[in-house]
Amino acid sequence: MRSGTRQNAHLTYRANTGAGRHGWLRLTPAYSVSLVRRYAAEMPPGSVVTDPFSGTGTTPLAAAEHGLTGQSLDVNPFLIWLGKMKTAAYEPEHLRETRRALAPLVHRAEELLPGAGELWEPELHNIGRWWARSALDALKAVRRALDVAAGGLPPGGRDLLDVAFCRTLIASSNAAFNHQSMSFKEDGEKDGAEGAGGGTVQALDLDAAREVLETFRREAGTTLANAADPLPGTARVLHGDSRDMQPAAGRLTPCDLLLTSPPYVNRMSYIRELRPYMYWMRHLRRAEDAGRLDWQAIGGTWGAATSRVRAWRPPGPEADGVPEPVAGELARTQAAIRRDGGRNGPLLANYVGKYVHDMWGHFRAAYRNVRGGGRVVYVIGNSTFYGNQVPAQEWYAALLREAGFAGIEVEVIRKRNSNKALFEYAVSGGRP
Ligand SMILES: C[S@@+](CC[C@H](N)C(=O)[O-])C[C@H]1O[C@@H](n2cnc3c(N)ncnc32)[C@H](O)[C@@H]1O
Image (cartoon, rainbow, N blue to C red; front, side):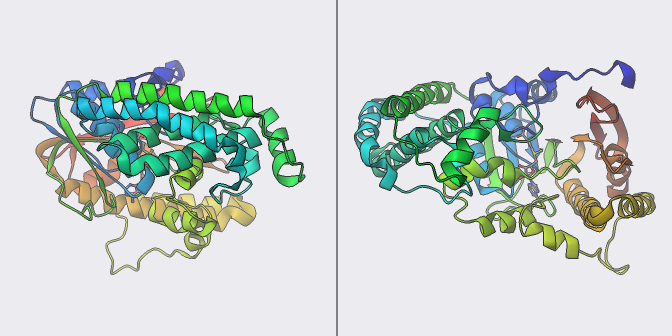
């Protein structure tokens, strides 16, 4: 089976970019709409679908598109905002009013362009690496025009224009998404080095800046058009930790289907991926904020979260630790990572240990949040550290069984990249 498993790009975020609201912002680890729609389509009307790791809100949106009730949790404030916007119902009159407000807003931004250098900009490290001077000034002008116009916009209008702004800032940046995580385009790297490090001050190119304003106008048009598509079902996206599944506000309804893709055991940092959006949207104000937020994420090791992972110790035997058979395999894997990982060995062994510990907490909370007869589906990849396999799919299967789920199956969905050993799996089961 494995040798025949292809990379199946239609089962990744790449399939989401043209799919209406699903395409609003791309997050590399987002899973595919077609995969989620397949599961959602099997659910009878009235079903409740929960995603405890909401990300860009793919699951709750797909549930609402199928007339179901979606609910999801995340710890990242930017993703919670985005998920809420993607799943909201918008009044046609409010969308029309927002569209009418767009031309004066872009005009105002254009007037601000000559002095835009003086306007607020985010404290994103090495900002000249992200945007050439003209693009940066144009973004600053749009940001200011949006802030000033906000109070006069109808409900939802400000947020939809902010989505368009986010799309514009990434479209006009030097960031490329053709790798596993965000990186810089070759020539962008050169531009940025001059703009930021070398002290060469680029002149404002008004035509280039106006092009960015034009991108914003176009993105706003698309976003407002997508928002007009009605959603037959409903969805709630809440701030909450999947380790206890008790949102700060409100409660989750026990679900018929829990469908999710949790963080993989691969040190991907969502904060790192999302930082351009998060700085411009003021969810991050300075570098320390990023480490603090990433510590709340399972698998987070960005900034200051790294030293906290290094210092992390598993709870003592009196606490509810990871059960066998996973505990033994985990200990052996951690020992191998410590042995083979050189200076990083102890940190990465701890990282894997804490990840499994956190997911064990989640699986127990998941059991309490699925109705009798309900199903769970986890989309997860395996990983390797210094040649040592971390078979997350097998550990998930064993821990789900320990948490009380039955009929556990592990299915290969696709091969992840050119590395022969890396696959993506659907681990599923049911609550008796
Ligand atoms: C792989 S992504 C989910 C992608 C999602 N399926 C999509 O299509 O966009 C994992 C998500 O889990 C979130 N997360 C990490 N730790 C969490 C926790 N303790 N509680 C809730 N969400 C968490 C991250 O912020 C991230 O958005």
